[in-house]
Image 1 (tube, rainbow, N blue to C red):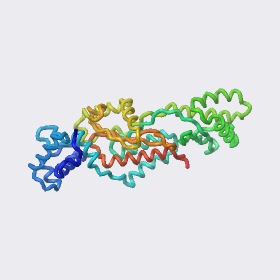
Image 2: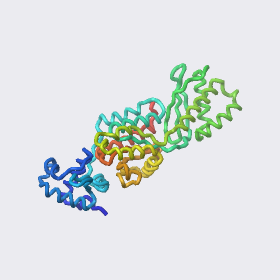
Image 3: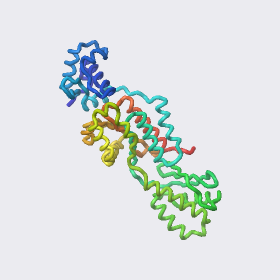
Image 4: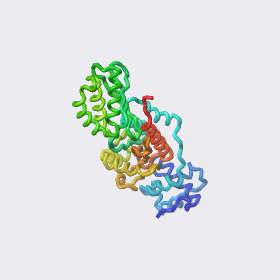
Length: 351
């Protein structure tokens, strides 16, 4: 059992903080002489060595090589994150870069992927978004004309999610056809899943051909086909920015990077890890060997669930990177991205 941070002496906490912050910045161990020169602790190298030895005996620091200085263990990083880290709020530019992805017109999956890319770029990690496959329950479908050749199909699901698709209009569609198709689909399909709606439309349109004009029938079939196709493609796990994991410090540890990239290729295990973060509202931090998935690659994951309009968890957003990632900066960034995605799930992005 490791001590809480308050059980360390002030001197031990100061030295420990310097070691951790140096490791996060450089990825390399730091020696006592360097600490005495750079830290402003007003301690001799010998005193610092004694403190570092005590911290090593507590399991908080480790010496990867003889006389190579010390670096934090996964346990030490956990103690730092839970007890000493001072979070930094995202800057205006960072918030703007993430929120800008909400304005994109198109499938919600594309906006989610773009948001993951933005998070990756800002955090210098790989961005992750986990959205479990789910059956949308329909509440309303409308067709909104964009031009003589295209219309916007707007789907409102029972959980309040609003999604848009642009479709090409069949020949002969008039404004009255759009209204007729919208009214027909909303009245007929409310409360059904997409699969149920597709089956009912196929069945009903063979019976009610005279109730709808030909253009409206073609419009209904085309609109529903677009949604059914998108539902089948709905991603489980989006990963963006794997290349950002290979920086100058990481290049010296190619075996670790290879293991990390292999972890990302095995998406099922990553998805299971992120799925476990859906419970509760808090940000979850998985550090290195605390999770067997990252025992070899020495990686950390920061993840937070995001919610839909009805308050239910829709998915999980996060980053994966080396254990030396800047937790104080990245944790608030993940939190902000989760809030941004929650708004994405609730807004009609055409408004």
